[in-house]
Image (tube, rainbow, N blue to C red; front, side):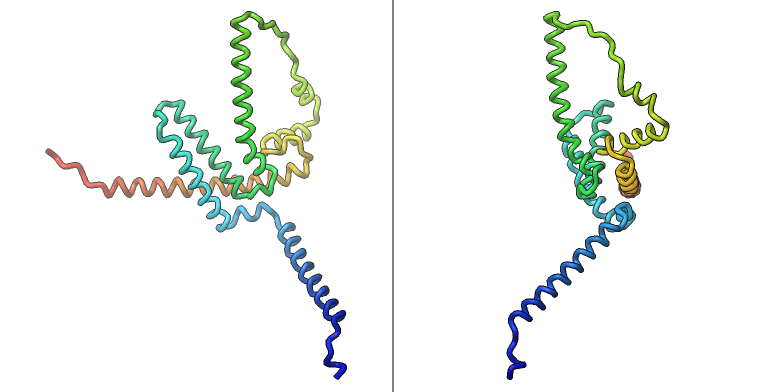
Length: 219
């Protein structure tokens, strides 16, 4: 009779031990995911399909915004720049902001907007100064960064160049730059594969539509 009576303290201890085991399993699973190389995911077909869908959405927005533009060379350059920015932004969205380079790409659009506003204010102030004659002759300044770059060792100069090439890694240490560059290069390779496949698909569909068109009738 006594053995059939359950002890509430024992039951509470067993529940706690079960919860601890579940937490340990979830923590171990998360650590295994974190230890996996991040650049390996860019080689998977699933990740390429995710990026393809985001790229098509971004390019459709670019085509809608550029429908009313002219056919001049300047508008063609603007469209090309818009396509490149849309492709990079879709790549950063596919990375989910988990890397420095993806966060830098996502925030660069806001920074560019503020720079344009500041540039407009500066040009307006320069125009006013030119009209009123209040501009002063400025002496040529020496670039301290160029002088410092010449005095740096070769390896350190190459590290700085690599940090400028990878978004968001201009002032980061070498281990961070190497890790971000490895992931960024793998993402760019996947971007090239996706855009090449999309270009082949569009060119194939265009050729098929032109071949299926009826021949012109003679009057």
